[in-house]
Structure formats: C-alpha cells, structure tokens
Length: 75
Image: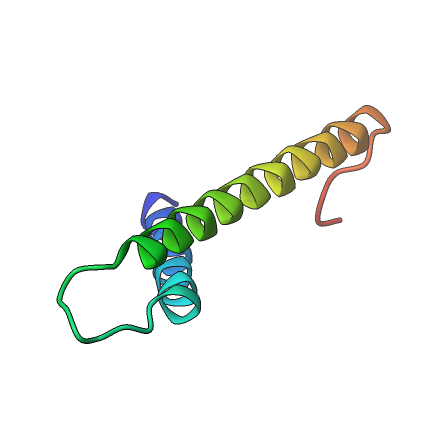
C-alpha cells in the first residue's frame, strides 16, 4: 500500500508542476524565473493545494456519513 501511495503522490506532484509551469512560465531568455512568473507559480501551487485539501475534507465527511449510515464504501 505504501508504494501505491508514493506513486500516486509523485504522479499528482508531477501533474501539478507541469500545469503550473505551462500556465506561468513563458520567458525563456533567463535561467531564473522573473518575479511575475514566480508569483504566478506560487499562486498556482497554493490554489491547487487548497483545492486538494478541500476535496479531501469533503471525501472524509462523505465517508464518515456513509459509515454512520452503515454503508461501506465500494460495496
């Protein structure tokens, strides 16, 4: 189970990096990010992590409600 979780985490991380890079980085004349790009990347990552956290909270709430009603997930 641990390997699967690590693989899922790495996949999610890779997709996040790719999405924020694609959305924010467009000046390839320097090897460093310009301040506008850096700010964009920070906002992109922050927004994604907050969304992920909110989805996780809702999933846990739904799971708890199902358990309370005697329903098991996946059945």
